Image (tube, rainbow, N blue to C red; front, side, top):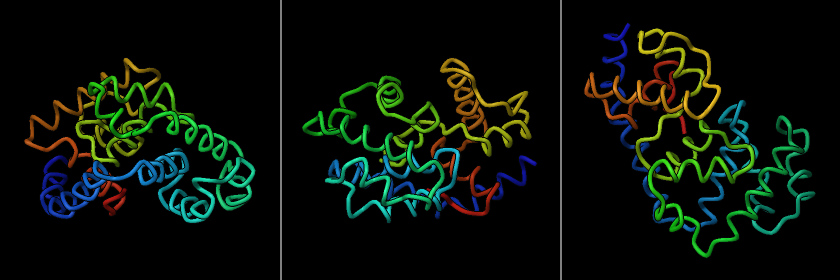
Length: 206
């Protein structure tokens, strides 16, 4: 199966590299643009990219000035768990507004410190969502340990089980194994995540 994946990786590499270049552009974006990625990650968690895109489209008119009630009305019955996700989003906006330049603050942090800052401060963000968010705004070398990745890493005998990590230490242990797997086969770890997703779903996802 690994030989099949290697063929897939190199057949989609240019498309994957193009997507990563899009993510990198966020490093020169405004905090408002960065907040749109917060929306995406809040509504994509345990759901889908399609639902997250729907939420972002519906919320845009009230995204930066709306109340919690405005958020909830905008996505009411259009997405799963709209009340609690709206609350998470509203509280995350307040967190970002504490900084004159949120992206500069993230830049000032060390690699692991940056992810833990997101996890410990943003509502609705665990290690996976924090990694997803940071990858989507152009930071490198964070593994998004979701079910597709876990299943494939188990199929490739990198992991013994596809059970999700229960805590930070387990997450980092799995991440380290994925990074070593990437090094073994000469894969770029950021490209690898998108390649695993496209191998499983057929799409180079956001």
